[in-house]
Image 1: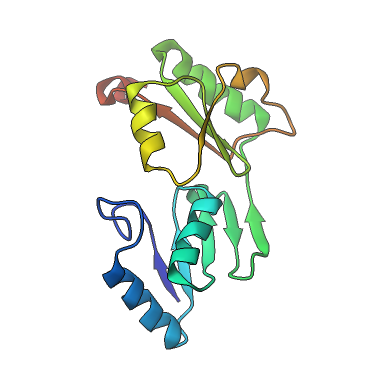
Image 2: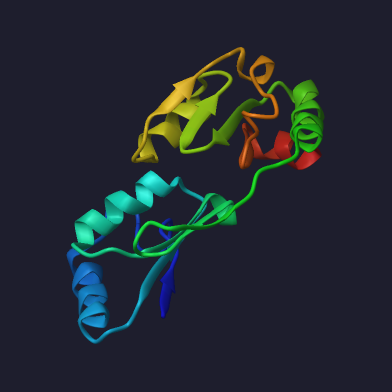
Length: 158
């Protein structure tokens, strides 16, 4: 099995896989090597890459929150407990960061800033703006991934 990340690996300064990398992955696939994409991105973004490649891939998305085999069978799924998710959110609240949250296959942000706009430009799925997001977090809507977006010096204080 060959496993690759996307950002900084298959996506090198661009959104999408280069023709050279596509050819290399197709060569491996043609030799019977299983291909897996492991990334912090959403599963739908990995599916977009698989479509670019022209064959199904095993998928690990949202930093391990979801694992699918190449046939689309869900092998593993994890999310924060409601208590942990709220504690993470509360830890970042005093810093007034934009909070980016993945729930299922959707990505939400609590506010649009220059930083979240920059992130949105690099996504293959929409970033959904919802300032009241944390009021909607409950046992049925628990994040699998939580990110704070802001200035590095402030994030390091967190």
